[in-house]
Length: 311
Image (cartoon, rainbow, N blue to C red; front, side):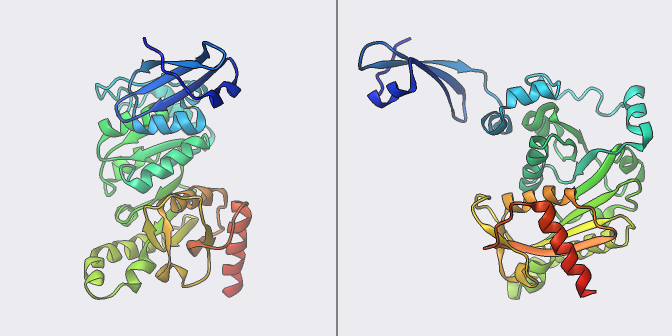
């Protein structure tokens, strides 16, 4: 394979340097080696194509290492096989029921952008994740064995009983799931991302377009509040596709109706909300703003304290 000359500035990296580059079609590893006093050459070797989310994990947290830590294979077959997904083994059933252990987080609408962002952040935190998806085959290619996938009707009590097995917390990032759930029995914490403030503040044609979503958001909130399960309702501003982590936050009352927040930041708040289980319920508004948050548990405790002082 022919080598390519590189700038002399790369020589400062030492006799050899290993780096990775990737695109939509493939990923390659390249080794840079000094071949003369002022020149270096690079050799690239193609690797097997992996999914987009796996590429993100490999880049951010060292995906291959995570797969080994989780005891998972490198990549699962693309035949869509989900052996063991529908037919739970007796050992798994006993393990879930042992001492009433419920340490899995159930994410609804795992196919959506927000759902995928939440799932990815939970994986990075080492959390056991179960996700409700519409397309199991596509989700399997995206998340591999990191996530237990399930599909079904939220209004089907039999399906929910099985889906919630071993589940301690539910995160619902989009409208329409919780309002169909008849019972959250066994769940210890429900986290709902709500756009109700945005829908209520819209007017004209936009209000007409948001009417159905507004009703679903209202029903979701009412269902959670009346569920007798500790809940956190996060009323965000308008969701934006901008990168997260670049701005602070605004938790003031009325902020959600006027402001906006990146989807990545909203997903992070949903995940961080799991660290604080309120005695009954916590409802707060949030948008991107000026307040820098380094301790999310402390921030949520502060928000909860402000809420209790208003009552």
